[in-house]
Length: 111
Image (cartoon, one colour):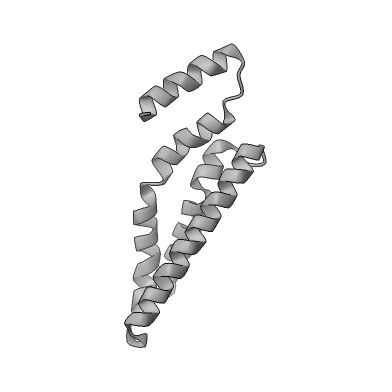
C-alpha cells in the first residue's frame, strides 16, 4: 500500500473511531526507513577513518554490528510504539535520531 493510500485509510478509520496506532506507525516507518542509508553513512564515515588501519575485517565486523544494532533499536521502538509507550512519529524516527546523533558526535570529534 502506498503512503497516500495508507494516509487515506488512517483518516477514514480515525473518523470511525477505530484505533489506528499501528497504521500510523507503519505510515511513519515508510518515511524513516529510507533515511537509514543516509544515517548509517553519516555514522560509518568517522568509523571508517578511525579504524582504517585495522584492516578489512574490522570494517566488516563494524558493519555487521551497526546493522544489528539498528535492527534491534528499530524492532524495540516499533514494539514500544505499538504498545503506546512512544508516539508513532517518535517510534519510527528514534533509531535514526540516535544513530545520526552518534555519527555527528563522532564526526565532530574526528580530526
